[in-house]
Image (cartoon, rainbow, N blue to C red; front, side, top):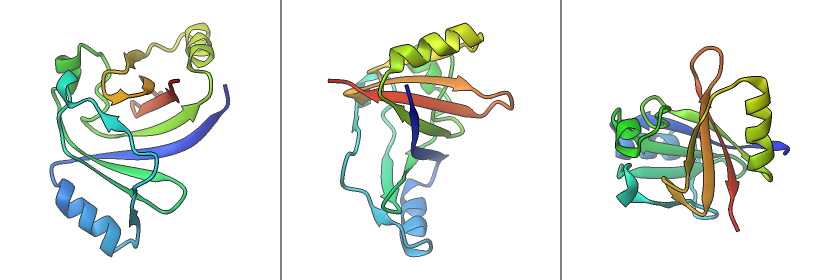
Amino acid sequence: MKLRLHHINLSTDKVGEMDVFYRDVLGLETETQGLPVLEKGKGYAGDVAFVTDGYIQTHLAQKDVLAGFKTGQTVNAVSHGHIAYRTDDLDAFKAHLDASGVPYSDWGHTAVAGWKQIFFYDPDGNVIEVHEVAD
């Protein structure tokens, strides 16, 4: 159930401008490896650009304040962005959250094909994603 930082998601209305900024000003590269396959027909159809420093991805996602309503989820992962961790045992992590009294939204495969995702809030209201790559 070990967690590893996987990506940071920045929600924006300027995906193209943000992509250019992060590549040209910060020197990040367009990510081409291990990209999620977006499930645009399941509630979130926004544009997303992917950049990386070679270790951690940054997802520049089109802001959608209604994505929670469209997907039937309590936590909206693309209204204000989130930080994401990858785990090798999402069920064990969910059991850990349950035991800790931390509620979460189980997005399953709603947003990304092949990833099981949950989203929850930290004590200050920041959104955290934990996902597992499904077999």
